[in-house]
Picture 1: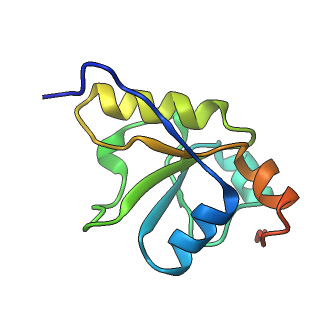
Picture 2: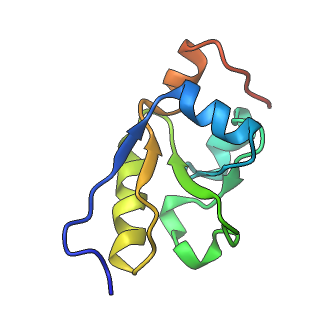
Length: 109
């Protein structure tokens, strides 16, 4: 039964980086392929918002699913869409890859 009051929890770049490092997070980048080709967060999984299907996200196996995008807007949209379909995916990278880079964290091309 989907949550009647979906909400999205903001995670800092540092929290997401630590979760990735410790294997507690699956980071799902919902930007489009033309964006992720230029730059992406290492270890992220691409599930573009334009064709978003939460079932396409790899099985979390106990990990938290966290969404990311460029600035934090599309990741909230994706989290809410997943929750509407009954997935308990309620976290996103606040500020997106822009905040990630501003925190001095690595990206790959």
